[in-house]
Amino acid sequence: MVQMRLELIPIPVSDIDTAKDFYVRAGFNADHDIPVSDDLRFVQLTPPGSACSIVLDVNMTEMNAGSRRETQCVIDNAEAARDDLRERGIDVSDVDEQPWGRFVYFSDPDGNTWALQQAPEQTGQSA
Image 1: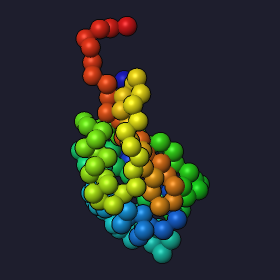
Image 2: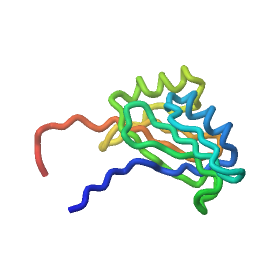
Image 3: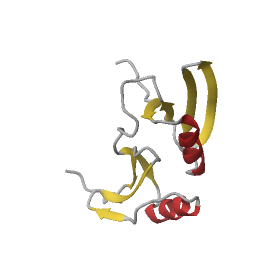
């Protein structure tokens, strides 16, 4: 089978500079900011510890700004993630306890939503 690595997810935004500032404040690394043409600016950012990046999308796809829902990252500790984001000035939810993990949620300025999941501890039992 051909190997497929997920490496870039478009995040539809209305303003590149506002979105870039938000994601950098949230701890994402600003990898690239390249003006391609008068109509296209390629801004790629990577969440800390991730092999997959995001690209801020004003006009590369047909998605409306703010329409990306529940992009999910896995984290080691929900409280630590919540506290870190709050210290960075990001409006983040309290920890949401679910049987399938512990979550914190936040939205970017356009309303694109993110879920950060602390996976449940494995018990060693199989289904």
